[in-house]
Image (cartoon, rainbow, N blue to C red; front, side, top):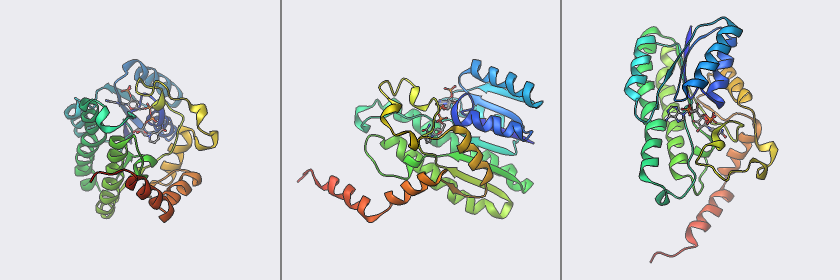
Length: 253
Ligand SMILES: NC(=O)c1ccc[n+]([C@@H]2O[C@H](COP(=O)([O-])OP(=O)(O)OC[C@H]3O[C@@H](n4cnc5c(N)ncnc54)[C@H](OP(=O)(O)O)[C@@H]3O)[C@@H](O)[C@H]2O)c1
């Protein structure tokens, strides 16, 4: 059995690689940082006696290569974890940032799901996990592209899950909250300070991936009870009322 994981050089994707290696899956890992992928390959092959291949690909420009790898290898499990955040007001950021996010979060996810579903449907077996985010389910300011692309992943995955269920193919939108990974250490978060956020809000990438795999039949998975509670609160009338008040507080005409 084989699993293909994007965003496998770090964080949640890397944690998925270790979880699936424990379950004796052979792995195909994709990300840009080749030296990290190479280290993970050596460590996993040595520790779990499985075969690991990796490809250094940039999913802003190499989605065709990514799809070809899926067609050639037909993995039993596809996990789309590659992703990044760029805080800031939509119009303040370069449009190039937005275009990159559309490629990695939307084009790569949609095309890879299409490629995988074609053979999974024939085989009547398969599993896809697309990493969305709790931020994609909650309205907020300063992460318009991140939130809306992640919202798309959540909606798209759930709709596909309904279509694919009859073919014994399981699709999950995984929506983690704050997770200890490299996500907030990139150049786009130069001033991010984890200590400003209460510790209880954070969880480990291992706990995210373990819950995801355990509940792989759940089309929309928000890991952790606390995050599910935050999501429910965000959908209440009070929260929507506060957002509506903020929206109304400035004048256009
Ligand atoms: N951490 C959180 O708090 C959190 C919360 C909710 C959702 N998420 C989501 O979880 C997913 C994984 O993020 P993470 O938290 O594990 O962060 P991370 O540690 O920064 O990992 C992100 C992964 O995506 C890869 N990646 C980024 N841009 C890429 C590109 N253009 N081409 C190919 N690979 C690319 C990175 O690899 P290279 O740099 O080597 O290419 C890395 O392996 C993301 O989709 C993120 O939106 C994270």
